Length: 387
Image 1 (cartoon, rainbow, N blue to C red):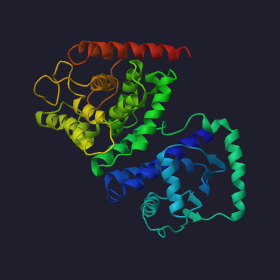
Image 2 (tube, one colour):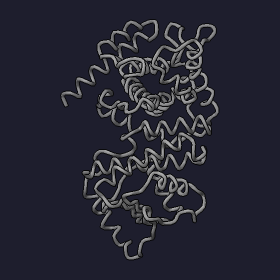
Image 3 (spheres, rainbow, N blue to C red):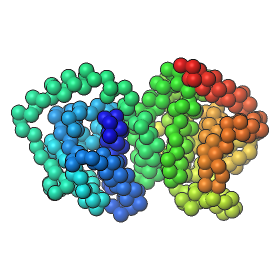
Image 4 (spheres, one colour):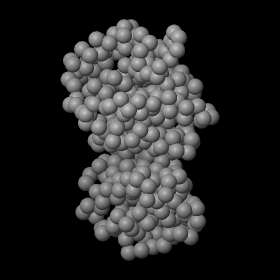
């Protein structure tokens, strides 16, 4: 495994580890969310251990080193991992080949405990402290990190798999009513930087790796598409960041929808359709409880399935004028859904997606916004091909 691939696996392992230890505070250790997180962390660790006897982490002040490489990441998951090591007073942590899933599960449960004396070395997970003499290595690693652009070129925050971060956001909002403002702010900032440097929204879209992750991957893609269109329309600064936040959280209510409905291969019956359509109201209600969240987020969660001509859901009385951001999200929402393979149909071709969107112009979608959206995607995609 080359250094970049190793670093990608390592980032995903840390992300799974920190989100799972955080969720153990909310859920019992046998909850499907916890089991899934532990399984994902184990898969990443197993991949890293292929051809290696061990993976060793060494904490030198605020610098983490693994396999002789200084690790330079950004984001709350990274900071949380460092904070947990410091809280447990761990300077060295080693995972050895042969580690079982059950052993990693027990480690994660112990690692998440508030007690400082819950971790003990085993044959496959070892802990230790650094010799004072080793502190002198810090400058060596600092210089190595500064002189090697290879490690700064690609992987900052969570562009690796932002859908994992959105999944964690959704779960915390719906279960505990907490909102990780720093997490979503960093996701939005990364997307904005790429959009403003001329990146094509189509090349930025996250690919769906598992049908179980559709809701979260879809939310990421709607966020990218919405911010791209909003930025081209002249939105900027804090307004654009609020728009990104609202787009990323538009489907938060779906986390309460049973999987058998979300993944059903056939058409939904009337009862299932009613449950599915409840996600917009449920999402808005949940977001209303959160302090510090832009009001725009709950508006978009409520309105993103309302049509331009007043149809759609939820049913509202009188002449309801949807917010322009809800109208943008509605277009991005349908665009990404049509281009993605779903349990009940195959992904549609770009021409078919455009044809269906144009049929909805003036009925489902704001005609001006739809034209701007389609032209913007074509122009930016063509520009990216000639870079």
